[in-house]
Length: 407
Image 1: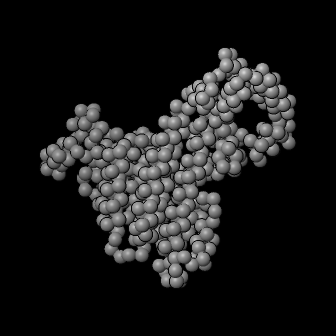
Image 2: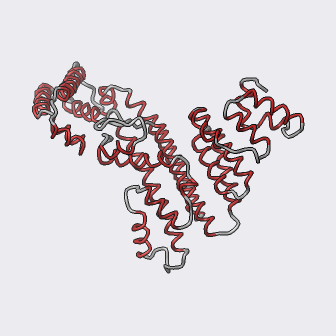
Image 3: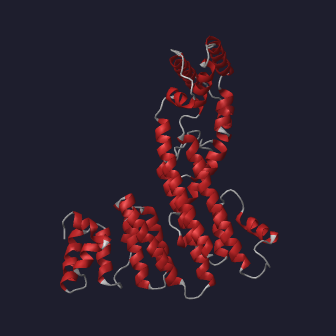
């Protein structure tokens, strides 16, 4: 299990680095005209006027395709085809003459480029056009990698857990592998994973935050793999508001990928920690402390989603009531910083603090933005020594008050 923890962390760090590199490269490539990419891809300079002719021709072809789609009068049968497979339906509905006419024009242009290097440059230009922009191609591939890594780690952790039950003689037993695949299914079946992990005794949905958003990561991966990002009815039914229109193309940016890496890390680490706690006695506090350290490291890196998730995990694993409350507050503070005050209001308002130490009543007032009452209680706690000067300067829950000079 410890090896799987290291694997999950290493995988997450590597994927984050990949997202950063891909974003930088995509920004560079997406911002270049196809002609500039072609100039970089061939050692033969373009003949005078060739690049301009190609750019004019390809821009005209692209506009003709847009006009053809805009002019389509879709019947009910066509709409059903769009819902089943929007991308394939769109390709079939494009007038066939569009592509043939484009190829004829390119052939005519090729005939005019008999001078050395002319045809080679045209090939480089067309290849550059096909690979620009990069982001719609590279980012879905990274999303697939993120989900595939999660699937592998989840399978490995479950395999180890089942092996430790003593029913199999070896981790390499094919029957064990078959059992793991039977339990987990295929294609990022997140709800099935949850059922199987909870059958093993780990309450995974209590350990991991934002389960619906995590589910969207895998659903969106499937949508890009099978539909090139075009929304189908299945995705639209389960999507969170605002629900995208069927046939629309989802955007996939670097921030979504960063969040996806964090969510998958929290899933795999939460599952592993939960199963360790099931198998070993008196490890809850050790695991909670490890999760807390990860939360503080995430805070240093400015990774608010990860910070919230690890504080939530630490609270769920801890067996000390006050520690659970402290992590609850820290998780709320991270979410508030990420999504705004309204994202925590309902939970904080329902939080019962009467039986808790007074600092928790103060935390509740701060999170609810009841600053007048909060400052009054704060002064009392400073006066009786409950809060020290170091607490006031260092505690995250006082950050907004310090910034607004309320204390």
